[in-house]
Amino acid sequence: MTDQVDRILEQWSTEKPDLDVSPMAVIGRLSRTALAVESRLAATFARYGLDASSFDVLATLLRSGAPYRISPAALARDAMISTSAVAQRLNKLQTRGLVSREANPDDGRGILVALTDAGKRLIDAALAPHVETERTITQILSDDEQSLLVGLLQRINAAATHGLNESAQRTQVASANDELSDPK
Amino acid sequence: MTDQVDRILEQWSTEKPDLDVSPMAVIGRLSRTALAVESRLAATFARYGLDASSFDVLATLLRSGAPYRISPAALARDAMISTSAVAQRLNKLQTRGLVSREANPDDGRGILVALTDAGKRLIDAALAPHVETERTITQILSDDEQSLLVGLLQRINAAATHGLNESAQRTQVASANDELSDPK
DNA sequence: CTATTATAGCTAAGTGCTTAGCAATTGATA
DNA sequence: TATCAATTGCTAAGCACTTAGCTATAATAG
Image (cartoon, rainbow over all chains, first blue to last red):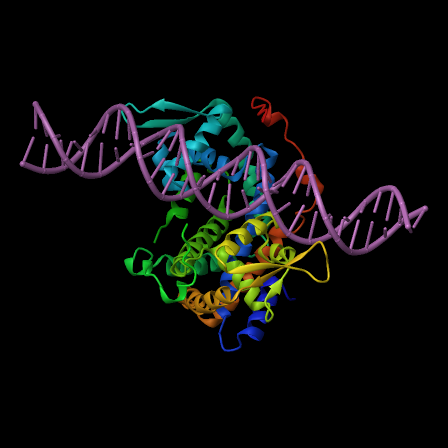
């Protein structure tokens, strides 16, 4: 059974026969699979008037436990986005009455994001269906296979993250770029 | 070794002990791993003045083989984006002189996107380093483990894609949404 | 042949992210 | 204690995508 990635690999082996492009088989499928899963999950979110970003905020508040209050900075860390993106997500959710902003009694600079009653009802209703959608996808694998997959993903993740903070990666390759002079 | 996903699962088991959230272990790691890989690849693209989107277009043209000409529609299918997004990517690349637009002799409506000499030189220079970066990540796994991972991802992909075009998924859950009345 | 429908590529407007830069408060240092 | 630095959360502007809607050409039906 040949898929899109197979076709891409075939093209490369024709055009660049000396280049071993086997890493693309892994990484290409990784991104495409993540995309397919995302798009499947979006359908469930939409049934509750949510998208992945909004669900993420509400779910993070819910699983933090009563009294369902956390700082925007914590939300940003958890979702791996900028605090600016969090502020914009909160603006939307607050307009819909799903979260509220309260002063942080322990820090005059900060606030606490609180789940409103409506927000709690909505995320309580959406959570189980969401997990069911996820289970629909993952149950194609046995428990052992799932553990295996998780282990492989963790190792890939570690390999990808390794050395990302090294400064040498900002080196310019001037010679290959001469004719471009992209002036911005 | 506990990671971010482990912490999230622990929170859920405390807050919703009756809910089996094990699917999150798989899907959470899938998205986060894809993200980490993406971000690692971006560093290599940047060394050549490119981002993933631009690299994608140039690489697609290159692997199509001489005379390195394909239609915007084909580019859109390949990259899984809208033809409008392709047009905008092409505007940028054309401004930089990396691709050009030519009339399609076989279809008066269409055009052909052509790799310029500068574009060919740049993608020829960037391709091998990119694949090397990918290999740096994937070589953490043995060949057998890579095949295993690919097989598991393909099955997850198939499960996620399955039934995505069914109309029943647009059903509204009105009762849970009453208090929201998000008017758009 | 003409009228209709479908296709190809584009711009415009809207969305959600990013980085840059702001005001306010807190923490660290002399 | 006064000052300087770091942190917090925000808006503004820029960027890459989306959908909607446009024009032009091609394919189809009568």
